[in-house]
Length: 274
Image (cartoon, rainbow, N blue to C red):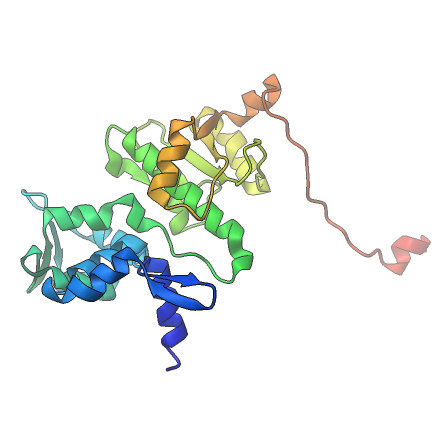
């Protein structure tokens, strides 16, 4: 019984249950899982879990350690796969002949497409609700990751590096360019262009020049589905791309104002001049 609240949170996030004032009810997808999932060996629930992003980290690591066969299925030594993606593999085994787990893991091409789709890489919402900014940032980064992959000669060379290291000063790197291009992503519910650069981000932006760009996504709603929101925003011209921060500041296209100051309480010696 202690696990019930957490399980309900998962079902709501996956989109199988929705809240309605003081009660809960199954969504259309939830009714499909409840009434038909047993006929498919659990595939409907498996797809819902994969597409929710709850196993995004495991999916990303499995894709990194595996390799593509001649027919584009994913192949990985069993012990490696189980080490990096234990729960995800349990879900994948619901798909019968599409997955084989002997001395190696083999995942069919269509299922590889599911776990590598960028929508499955969105981390679950951060709790409590006070972490709204983190959820907004994750969604913006996902949008730019998809945008860069769609426009890349080789999508595999686009990497969402901030998922593993947030200290780089940028979120995405694109190895389709020489030198590689770095992308810092900013997202806001407001449409007016206003965003913050940390001292590290500004330093990296100035050092890299035209090899560094900022993507700004405005008017973002966390209530809309990520696919629908991405399509809506790209249709109206997002992301707004700012490449070469130094030149943009010098030309006056962008302006920058320091917003952080160090405040300390002076010692008696400093205050009295002794």
